Image (cartoon, helix red, strand yellow):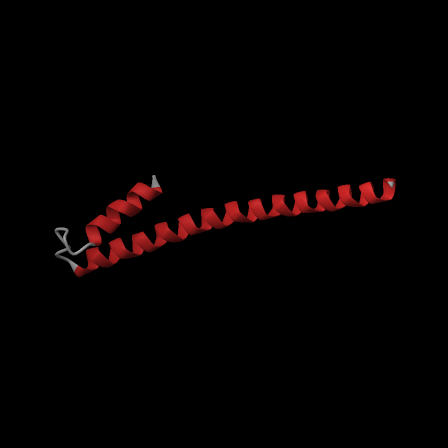
Length: 73
């Protein structure tokens, strides 16, 4: 939903669009666009943080398995 709203705001802010008669309306649209972009970045950051956490867990498991294999020999 947010991506489509971002795209519609971007389409409205282009020079080819109808434009805004009121500078305050354009400012509000730009602020709304910035807020939506920040929310999307926050979601992406959260996803990347979880992915990094799982990669660290997998790395630790690999080290444990390697140590176990060396210890068994």
